[in-house]
Image (tube, rainbow, N blue to C red):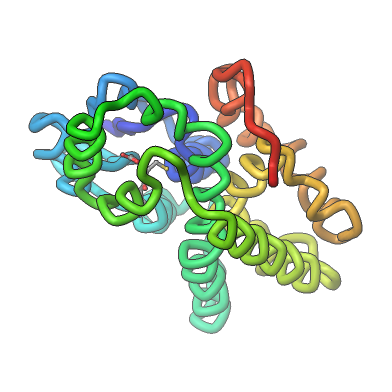
Length: 247
Ligand SMILES: N[C@@H](CCC(=O)N[C@@H](CS)C(=O)NCC(=O)O)C(=O)O
């Protein structure tokens, strides 16, 4: 029995939902409510001490961290493989996973919070702001830097640069192959939520002149797994009436 503790708009959760749907694995979707800070309650922290989603429960096992969960699922349910069969291919796929986790996954948080999520901190008193920051197990430094006013202009511009670099790297890789590692793999699903969020935030101009990237993105959106992952309520534009303009 598989249970995914996750949040509809969380990009890390979307990576795992994409993998589950692509592989055709049945699972129970257990939403974790960010508004009530369910992910920071003792009950949730007993499952995931980092206070983040997603968490996968597989019978009596707990599997944490979205990329780790993706690889776990692909090993335990090998019927629809999303990992290259040879060691060199796996090394190349894992290089993509590490790059995606270190660069675009980190970068997309900056405009996401500045344009969308920051509004939840605006009305907090100093004490409330500090309590909210200190409650964040994994992301305390990130929340402290964001404060009440958001990330600075240089930080924002730096994150746009990182996102541009990612799209350029993808476009180059996709010039001679259909998917990032040749065949469809976890690497593609790892980056989809960042790309989808970029479009949601109005940053899709970044790949306007990138033909291979555009082809990859169009093909990805045709996949049933993509449609199943992005149901109504999974995008910031589904939930918030006003999204700040990109700088
Ligand atoms: N490395 C972790 C990071 C998970 C993570 O940052 N999740 C975000 C949502 S995408 C979260 O739960 N944030 C809660 C918060 O900001 O308090 C993973 O990939 O699972």
